[in-house]
Image (cartoon, rainbow, N blue to C red; front, top):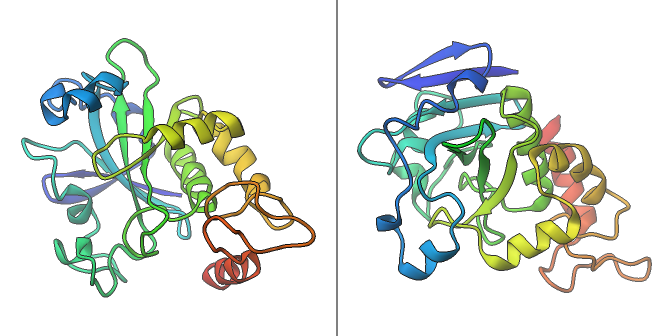
Length: 235
């Protein structure tokens, strides 16, 4: 596991992210002004600190930093100079070439009233694999384990974020129904829930796979191809 603090345009190797996760509280917090009234009414992390990170579950690398005045573009800046990624902002574009490579973007919301916060992983079922967004439930589980091993507390809640840094209600309902509430839940139970032989689709997470049909009728995933691709990536 290799862990970095991103500060002043440089990556500094550190033993763990744990001592750094509350650094955002004095300088960078989520406010209702960043949202619509409807969004703010159901957002659980208003007034929480905002730290940004990226993790690569294939190489075990995590990078974390606290945004300045602007919260935009920092994920792309963190990975600059590493192999297999595009320059920023090219890595964010829909027609990117390399994008974020194997890195997935996340946010850590530091709770001002408690030591444990919320890990929000960027999520979209329709995202390209290189978009820096977890595009399957199996990948969320892999990123959760990498984050936990990098110093994110295991008891932190985990949320699946859209581009507005909010978790849609249907994803909250899915997580609760599957018993996937904390980082540890995802890291420990995710590989079995979304692994080979499970009745849950590894992409969308729903119970759509049976002995008679190994094709997900909700998202179109064919698990045999999904897991072959995953094994190839790990070689």
